[in-house]
Length: 150
Image (tube, rainbow, N blue to C red):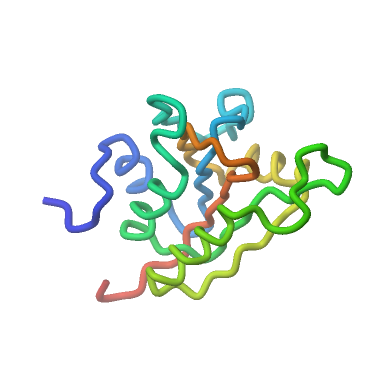
């Protein structure tokens, strides 16, 4: 019986095989998940209907299941017509979820095309495609080290 709140069998299987430095992408509804997978990555589609399941739902489950050492958002190009003039509201939600989980992890934006390159790397093990409707909601997590006794 699992103690954490993440119960999706395929996601648990992939995370069970993953190790330190493995990367997990929580993708929003606009992200081209299928054609940006890394060579070792699995894709799990949770996009049931618009805005169900959300990126924050997925993050809340993942923080109970894996150690997280880094969290990268997709940086917003200054010339993008959808630039919001500051951090998107969902980034504040991410910070709150990470803090509430007791994690000392800062959100670090990386430039859009560097973000795509990071997802295409051999360290990328999983993309969880959501139906998140918020713009700039993609979140790339790096799995950390599990402490002895956890």
